[in-house]
Amino acid sequence: MVTQMDVIRFLQESSHELKDILSSSIQALDAINENVFAVAKNTKVDEVIKTMRAASLTAVPVVDADGVELLQDGRGKQVVETFSASDLRDCPMAQLQSWLGLTVTEFKEKVGALKATLTPEGGTAISDVQQSPKLITSFPENSLKEVIEMVVVNHVHRVWVVDRQSLLLGLVSLTDILRAVRESALKMDQDMQGIVSQ
Image 1 (cartoon, helix red, strand yellow):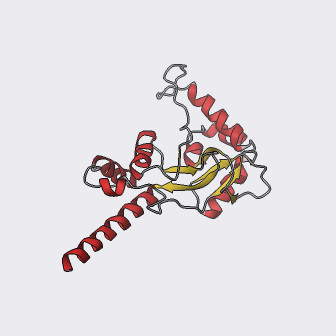
Image 2 (image 1 turned 120 degrees about the vertical axis):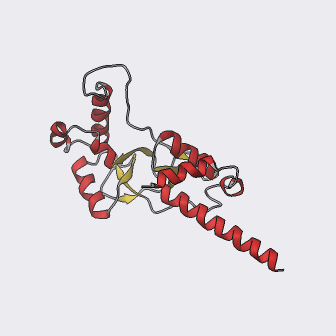
Image 3 (image 1 turned 30 degrees about the horizontal axis):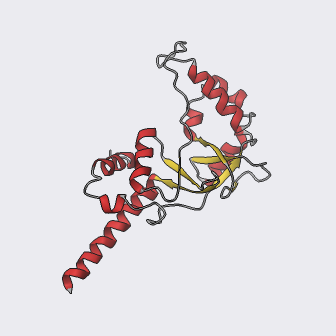
C-alpha cells in the first residue's frame, strides 16, 4: 500500500525534477486551506472527541481563546497546539476514561508526562524521552519544498499556517500538498502544449 506520506517523501526526493513547483510559495500555489475549525484550550477532551467525530475531523488546532462554541473558526487566533486522534492512541486505556473530563491542554500535558516515563517495551525509564509532536507552523511565503521538509522531518500530516504574530491563517495538509503539485504540473503541461502548438 502506498500512503500519502510515501508520495510526499517521493516528492521530497525528486525535488530537483520538480524545482519550479516546489520553489513556489504555498500561498502562490493556493495550497493553504483556510477552512480551519479549532477548539479552545479550555475545552474538555470528551467534548472535543464528540465534536471531531461529528465533523469527521482527525485533528484540530487548539487556540488560545475562551471556548463558547465547541468548534470555532480558528483563523486569526493564536494556535498553541494540535489535538489529534494520535493523542488518544498515546493515552493508556486505563487512564483514558478518567482523563476525558480534563481540558485539552491538561490532557496533552498528562499524556506527554506519561510518555516521558515509558520505554518502548512498556517499562519505566527517564532516558530516551519520547514527547508528543511539537506544533509545526509555516508562513504563507514558505516554499512548498520547505513545507514538505517540515512534514517529513516531523512526521506530521498537517502544518498550521500562521502570520508573523503567530495568528492562524489556515493549514496545509498532505492532501493540499498533493493537490497543489498535481494542479501545477497539469498547468505547466498545458502551457508547454500551448507553446509547442504555436
